[in-house]
Image (cartoon, rainbow, N blue to C red; front, side, top):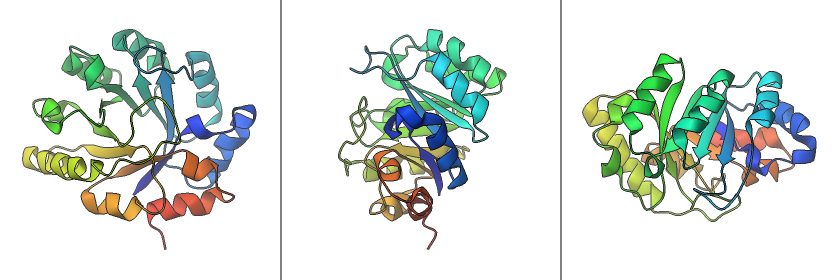
Length: 215
């Protein structure tokens, strides 16, 4: 299991220290939520902040766009060369076009599904993405309660990926902790995004190890 600490739950007054701490604790990716105040009712990291994060981090960036004008934000973050750049299927009329464009830029495209959005919505485009991010909370704010409906969606998505013989990671975001990590792995998840669980702990390394299921 790979773990992507969500910087939305980090102490913003000590952001550089927090990034270094989770990096040393075993983070595989740094998950960064970009919110525009329109697609979701919140505002978070802008390009200036993420550029600074990129300059100090050796851990690859996993940028999650929760925005309406997807193509404009894609252009903003392309120069930072994140490992994954994900956007919501609900926000984009031409998702395949954006995925193909991201691949030409050397960035792994990822699609995001809100809790209510069915797996069938990406059935025809699974071969065009390198990752699917399934939201296990309603997007926009950290610290929300995990929605168990995600287990069935993970299993359905895994079945689709295997049927298409596609090489696609399944990432899950929202309410992730040491209690549900093993169930998520069993369902078929590859990457867990965790914010509050990691950054509210007294030991980042042990929190990350518990999500990686390293006993």
